[in-house]
Amino acid sequence: MRNRRSTLPSCADLHVLHSLKYKNVGLTPISFLIINADLAQNYLMARRYDEAIEQSRRTLALDPRFYCARWFLAESLQMKGQLKEAIAEYEKLIELTDDPRAIAMLAQGYAAGGQTDKARNLLLQIEQLAAHRYVGALSIALVHLHLGETEQALEKIEQACRAPADPDILNLNVEPLLDPCGSNHALSAWSRNSSSIHQTADRK
View 1 (spheres, helix red, strand yellow):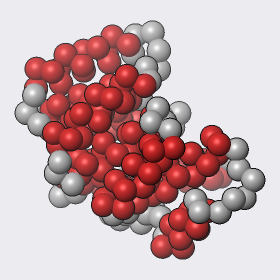
View 2 (tube, rainbow, N blue to C red):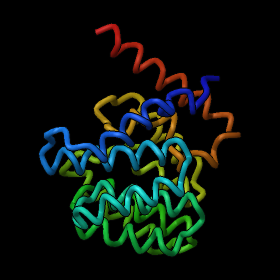
View 3 (cartoon, one colour):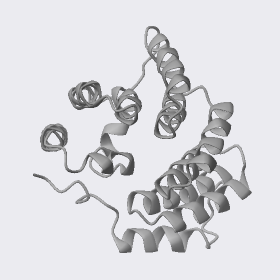
C-alpha cells in the first residue's frame, strides 16, 4: 500500500516558505497572505500542529478575514484534541465564506464532538447545495466518517477519486482528518485510486 504520508512537505520546502515570510520580495499583500497560509497548511499536513496553529494565528493577525488561515487553525486545533476551540473557529469560518467545504468542516467537527444532530442538519444543507452547485465528495466523506458511517464515507471517497476536479483530492494521501482510518483495509483502495488519478494526469 502506498504510504499516505509519502507526499508530505519536506523540511526543505518548509524552510523555503519559512524564510519567505520574513523577507520583502516585492509580494502583493494577498500573495504575502497566501505564502503565510501555505506555510501553516504545510505544518498541518506534516502533523506539526503547534507550529501550524502559531503560523495560522500569525496569518490571521495580518488579515482576520483570510478564511484559508482560519480553516488551517481550526483543523490544527482539532487534531491537537482542542475540539471546543476548533469548533469555535469552524463557526467563524462559515461566516467568512459560502464554500460548502467550510460547512462540511464544521459538520465533521460537530460529529467528532458528539453533536450529531447539528452535524446531520449541516450534512442535509450540504446535500441540498449539491443539487445546484458543485460540492466535493471528499468534504461529504469527512462528515460521514466522523459520524461513524464508514461505508458512506468510503463511497464518497471513491467518488472523489473518480472526479479529479475535486480540489481536495490532491491532499487525499496526507489529510490529517483521515488518520483515524489508517488501519482500515479500504484505505489501500483509496491510495490506489488516488495514485491512478495522478499517474493519468501526469501522462497528459
